[in-house]
Length: 527
Image (cartoon, rainbow, N blue to C red; front, side, top):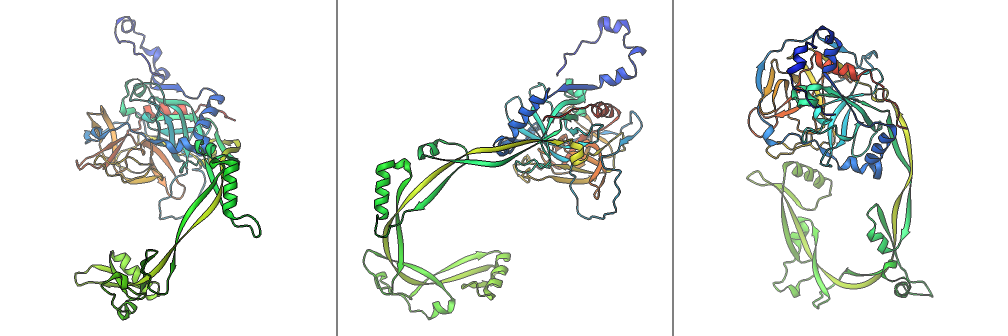
C-alpha cells in the first residue's frame, strides 16, 4: 500500500526520537515495504480461475510489460565505484547440496524461471519475467519492482498477480502460483526509486487445472452461428439410395422439414475431364501438363490459332529464380527423378528452375452435390483442480547474493518480446533467452530515470525480459546460481535504435534485509 510521507522537521525532529532506541531492527524495518496481494485462499482460487479458464485464454492474451517507451531507452552514464554497506554474503540455492559430475557444453535453462502475469490499472493483461528463489517455506519469487507495483499510475500492487514457472503458450507445467504478499524496498514503494527496482513475492502453493473430458452438443445452425466458443461442423454427402430416394429428393425433403438451419445444402461442382481430341466449342478449355525438356522439344509447335491447338502441342515455359539452397535441393531432387524441369546456373551466377508444359484439352462438366451438415458446440468438460505443492519443491529455487564485487560474470535469463526502439522485432516472448558476460566495473545511472546506482551488462534483450534474474556463479550442470540482480532497464549505448545494454539495481545489504523479511513468511494452500 502506498504511504503518505510525514514531513521531516517540527516536533518530530526536536524530540530526538530517532536516537538509540530506534536503532538496530528499527532501521531494518524502515527499509521494508509489505503489501498484501491475494488476501485469502478463496480470493487466490478466483485469480487462478481467471487465468486458467478457457484453456488459459487470459494467459495467452497477455502482452509484455510496457513500462519503458522509446524515449526511455537512453544511454547510461558511469557513476563511479561502489562501497559495500555490509560484508558480502549469500544464501545457497534449493538443491545446492546435490552433487553432480555432469559436463555440459550447451546452456541449460533453469527450471526456476517463468513469467509473472498481472492486470494493471488500465485493465491490461501483462507479463514480466521472474524466478523462484530460496526461502524457508520454498514459496518465494524474485522479480523487478515495476512488475509488482503499477508505477505508471502511482497506484497499489498489480491485480491478479501470478507466477507460472516454465510457462509455454498457455500451459502451466508446474502449476499456477498466486501472489500472497509483496516485499520491496520502502524507497521504491514510496518514491518509485529505480535504484530499488526489485521485489520478492510470497506465493501460495501451486494449483494445477486439467480438463478430463470435453462435452459437445449438436445444435441448429442459428445456435451454431451465435456461439462464440469452440465449435465444429461435420458434413455428410447425401447419396442416391438404390431403389429408393435420390440425393436431390433427400435434400429437398430436408429443406422442407427442417429449413436451411437444418443443415441441408447444395453445392455446384465444376470438374474437368481429359479429352482425347480437339474441343472447339464453349464447353471445352485448355490447360497445360508439365513434361521434361526432351518431351517438350520433341512436341509439335502449336498453331497460331488457339482453336486449332491439339493435345500434346508445345505449351508455355516457366522460369523461376532460386536461392542457392533451393538450387542445391532441386539438383538432388532432379537426380532422384522428382523434378521434370531444368535446374541450372546462368553466366551471371544466378540460379533458375525452367519448367516445360504441353497443351491438354479438357471437357468441362458441371454437377450438383447435396450435403447434410451437423453443427456441434463444445460446452466444456470435467475440470480437475489440484494442489500442486510448494514452488521450491517443484522447480527448486536460486540462491541469493548481496554486496558482491562488480565486474564479475553473470548469466541473465528472461522472456524478451518487445521490438527495439527502431521497430525491429527480434523476439517473440514465447521461449526464454539468455545473456552472459561481465557486469560493469563501475555503477551506472540515468538522469531520465533518476537512477544513480545500477549495474549494467551488454545484452540485447527487450521488454518482457524485465524482472528476469541475474545469476552469479551459475552452474550449467545444476542449473542453479545466486540471484544478484534483476533486469530493470533497457538501454541504447551507441544510439543506433537497438537495445544493447540492460541494467539492474545493485544488490546490497538493504536488499538482503528486504529479501530476508520475505524469505521467512509462510503462505499456505489455495485448495
